[in-house]
Length: 334
Length: 186
Image (cartoon, rainbow over all chains, first blue to last red; front, side, top):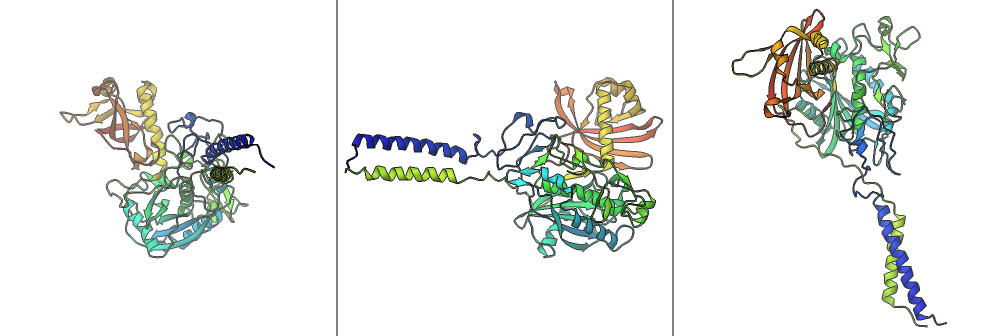
């Protein structure tokens, strides 16, 4: 059978046009449907960095496959969050933790138990409302390692970083980009850049050995109870007035939440620069008092210590955290 | 049967292959860029960029200092009398080294520095005195039409009849560049 030459040519040209149009449409799909190439978050002038942090806007869901939800009183600045499931927490006990008061093995045990049981709790799940363009925070974390650095020398910002670096390079702790390294100092140790006068703790990051390492400082607040403790006798205090463990737990919560949601200081914070835990600093919400039916220590019960969380067989007093959903707000759980 | 031009057929096959490839391969959204921090050595005189958990004292006096600025800016006499002691003085660089008294300061119309970064505030409690330092922002009228000016401020708060009152303010005009990354409340 002989095909008419003209009809065959017409069909070929038509097929070419159809395929060409298809090809060009496919290029737009490949770039995420956003005309601003390389911009993973849709521009929206109502969510600018200079926006009013008190303004409550309807949540703006991200495009399919992206996890950034904004409009809840905290803004996204294109940086990564920590999405490990779990995120690994490493503790570096600095100073003298074989001492007296709250500088004891009992505090070490209480804090390590807390970190070990915090992952996947309703409290930690608040963090799952935060994400970046490749996924959300898992809400899970685990105590992945601990080491002791016995020293009587005060810390500075520089020596703090060196302490973290040495713990890794010595092999005491692994070099882990999915880790948060927390330096916990005993109450005889000062951090000279402003512990107790300016801050109770802080978090930051640095490239150590070619890896982006997230680390934090949390001092024993028994060094300055009026500045860094909600109460001098906590629900886990071994004795009246020995509130360091519970005080540290509250600050550890604050720093770990923020290290996970804003690890490189370029992800989640509001127009004032406040991160998710900053927005609820020393804000505990509704609390209960240690009583005969609570699991608080005897000292906590006798002192009427307050608590607002119970998990892992312990009561704790932990600040609330800002949730990135439903318009935002300080909450005790998701 | 006359065959189609082989080159044309090859061209069509290439176009078809490209279209199929583009449509079936779903591209992942671009990953957020991890930040590398430089320099690695922390400058002892600057400290490391960091986000702090402010002490309770900083939280308290952040609110108090801002309330003071609001009272001064709005000339709220009742609020001013509650927060400023009768013998309030301002010490700042001038030709004679003299302090500026309360009434002269209030009448001068000078902008009162507003604390703008909580990371720049520190609070120290002593028995009778609270020392508050912060980096404030105001406008200097001399430069005309509200040119922004930073001030390093040290305030002494003492226990008075109506409560804690500001008795002495030490302030100097400075220029402190902002850190490249957020360090707390801005």
